[in-house]
Image (cartoon, rainbow, N blue to C red; front, side, top):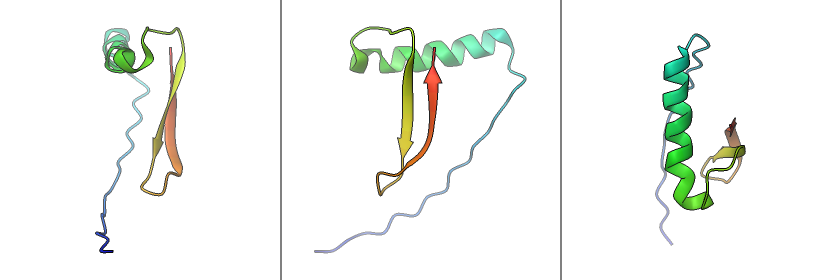
Length: 63
């Protein structure tokens, strides 16, 4: 079995000075993107990012 090696680089940007409107756009975008998968818009849920080996490398709680 041949296996391809995939290399990637992640950049984490934390902006603690978002304007309230920018924060709302980002939050609503995440909730709306995930709505088809969750069925409804819950008040709170978690998002996790896993690497190629299924190890959790990041995450967020979305309200």
